Amino acid sequence: MDRWSSKGGLVSLLLASLAEVALCAFASPSQLPEHHRMPSLAGAAAATCIAQGGKRVGVIGAGAAGLAAAKEMRKQGHDVTVIEQATEVGGVWCYDEAVEDDPLSKGSRRRVHSSMYRSLRTNLPREVMSFSDFPFDESFSPLRYPPHTVVRDYLAAYAEFHRLLDLVSLGRRVASVEPRGGGGWAA
Image (cartoon, rainbow, N blue to C red; front, side, top):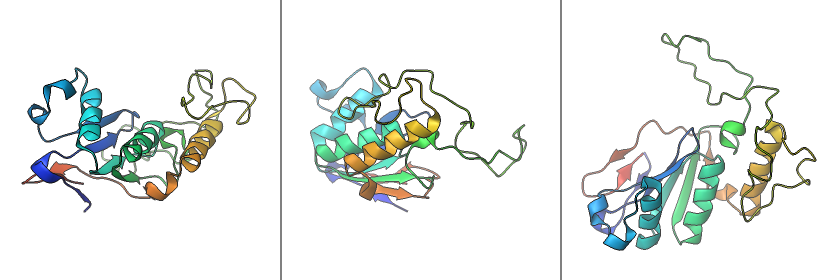
């Protein structure tokens, strides 16, 4: 079981969900100084992580949001570990030929991580999907609406360019995240 903790019990655990939404969870929002409280959970959590500095942070998911969050958290001086259940970075952009063995979800134990399908192309131009510090340009594909494999390759290149691959632990699934008594979280 991995553990993340901090002095004073205010720990930041960054979660990049299957929907690729990054969140930070913290022990108690009331512990935040007023100027760090924000209307959105993600914004407040990011401010908490940055304001506290030097925490051990767990990022769940190595998709677009998880990679960007890991990069920014490391830049703020945090010790970052990214946990990814797949065998490669890219999140939902990693295609898997497997299908669920129980399409009606009546007790199947086999779950497929992504709803990706073989012929999928993006419904947004690649420029819109680009990180501000890493262009998603013609060097990846001349197509403005590229196939999923190109998006996956772009995310892998982003991770490599920003030296994030050493932070990622592949093939590990997080079953639960629970607050620990005395502060911190157990995942």
